[in-house]
Length: 232
View 1 (cartoon, one colour):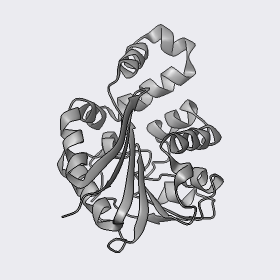
View 2 (cartoon, helix red, strand yellow; view 1 turned 30 degrees about the vertical axis):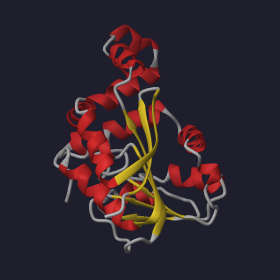
View 3 (spheres, helix red, strand yellow; view 1 turned 60 degrees about the vertical axis):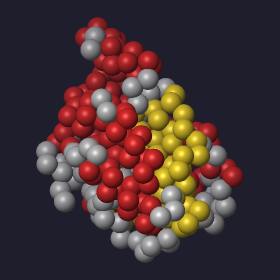
View 4 (tube, one colour; view 1 turned 90 degrees about the horizontal axis):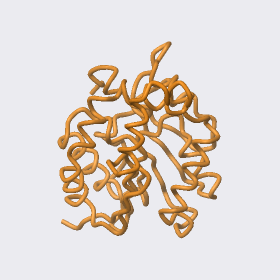
C-alpha cells in the first residue's frame, strides 16, 4: 500500500521526491549526528542498556537508519530496519541492514524478534485506528513470547502545545531556524499529525490491545511506551 499524498509520507515511510520539502526541513531541524545522539538518549532512558547485546532488534519506519546506528553505538549487533522508502533506505551506511517494505505487513517469521522499535512512524499512518492496529498486530506476531515493543511518538503535552504556539509566530520562525523547520514539517504532515494528536485514548487503546504496558511516560511532547506481548 502506497501513501495517498505528501501529507501521509513520513521521514521513515515514503518515497523521497527530488525536492522534498518535508525532508529538507527535517535536515534543517537536526543533523544526522544530532539525530543519532537523540536516539541514543531515548534508548538509554527506556532501559536499552539492560537488554542483551545479542538481542534481535528491528526498527520499524527506520528511514535512513539513524536509529540503527544508535543501536550499534550502544553495542547491539543483530539490528535490522524496515522502511517503505527505497531512497531513504539506500542512504544507510551501517553494519546492519534495511529492508524495503510496509510495516503493516512485516516480512519476518512469527516470534522471531526480541525487540521492535518505532520512533515517529505511527503518527504518519493515514487510517486511525485501522493502520495502527495492523502495525501493532504484526509487531505482536513477530516478537517472541517475552518480546518487547518500544514506541516513541508525538504527544500533546503542555510543552508541545507551547511549541505549536511558537510555530505559529512569524517573528519566532524568522529568529529561530529550528522552529521554522519544525513548522514546515508540521505543515506537510498536518492531516495525519493532527489526527494522531487529537485521539490519545484511541492510540492508548490500540497499544493496550496488543501489548501489556511496562513503562509509559509523557515528556517533552512525546509518549514513551514499552510493552510486552499479550498472550492470546
